[in-house]
Amino acid sequence: MPSPRRCSNPPRHPSPPSSSWPPASPSPATPTYHKTYKRIVLKKMTRAFTPGDPVLELAAKEGPQSAAEADDRWVQRPEQARIDKIVDGSEVGHYFLILGEKGTGKSSMLIEAMRKIDGDGVAMFEAHADLEIVRIRLGKALDFEFHEDYIGGYFSERGPRDTTALLDIERALNKLEKVALKNRATRKKPLVVIINQMHLIRDDEDGKDLIELLQQRAEQWAASNLVTMVFNTDDYWVYERLKQLATRMEVMSVRDLPKQQAINALWKYRVKYFGEQLEQKKLEEGRLSFLNRVAKSKDMIATCKSICAVEKTWFLNQCWILGAEMDDDVMDQQKWASGAMVLAQALVDEEEEMDSLYDPERGHIMPSFPMHKAQQIMTRADFIRNMDRLNLFSIAADAQVRASSVPMHRAFKEICAEEGFRDHLEKTIVRIGDIESLGRTRELVAKDLVLGGKYEIKRDGKNGVVVKLVEGEDRGMLSSLFSPLSPGFEIAGLVDEDITVVQGMSLRSDRDPTMID
Image (cartoon, rainbow, N blue to C red):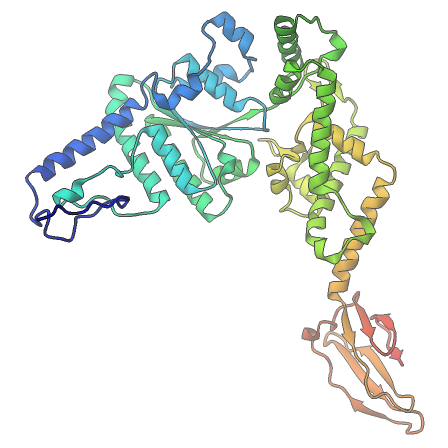
């Protein structure tokens, strides 16, 4: 009898074969295999938190070998000491959200803290918009196969059923909880799970379900000191989502590097790698991502100008306004763009009213508005979060809205200082209003007006508008009284709308009756 054919692409969770091979009765090996498999799963996940695990090789790669080398290699931020305590498990009883603009050094601080302890007791992975990819990355970080390597079906033991990515993530967290409970007595401190780039999760129902699942585990584990979860994000909406259910969450706000630290780091780097003694007037504070590019550049001034030009181009490409000639098809996009320009103009005007723009210790002081005030300036409450995602504006942990960076604020100033900008912005806003008014305009068509006949239109209190047909003077009487138009006829009760009569003229409805030929 020929041996059964094996499928080249086996199902994700294979079920027992429906044929007579193997036998339908449970095999004596079934309980042994099942228990052994579950024990191996926990053992592999435990190994994921040991030092030198392949999952953490990326974090430890090319790290400095001594304290002196670390001092030259890394820019020490004020938050680094606390992050070191969080990552090594010393700070317990809470879970943490690290919030800050892109390029401020959040991920670098976490990786540096992992390097100091060689990744002992820490697992880290990147979030993603697709839940299936989040599932795969979580499995890689925890060394968990989601039972894809389970072959108990061949022993008439049914494995886990096919399911969704969210349920698979829940199963992985269940296994992690068992590992943490098993190792709590020996480790004497919690495991640490870091989820980087939380802002990449989509702000939709699936994304909210994932964040809720992770937060529930974080709250439970923080209370029992089993696992400390660390969420790292660039965008404010993640904080808003977590804030709703948070009781043990602590927020760390990471901003641009203070002036003196940035100057010292840049000066040391240029001396070590370029042998250049920089003049003090060339040194400025800044963001770590920008500072890194400037420090490695042969022409620092040209690189600074390039960074400012890139930020300005990005803002203009996203938010430029089209003026009075704009087509009505782009009105929705132009509402968003004009809101961004109005807020940028308000920030520039606010800077002019500030008493001081520069602090010797902190460096540049950028103007900002509370979030509710920024929404009021734009007259829209739903725009600012998307602008934060695009790194046009930044919302800090204290809900202060400002430009996403100093180069971006310089771009605001250059754009608002262009000749005719305010007039161009005003024309755009007027054009948007005109298009919206046109959308509310209705047409009345006057028919069969003979012998000098006319229509008389007058307001009838709250019931709407009354239209009467006045026949020619040779008949000398009123007839054909039309019924009052209900408010559902669009023009009823609308005082400020335009009414266009095709065979007559355009008029604006008001309290006085108007005669139309």
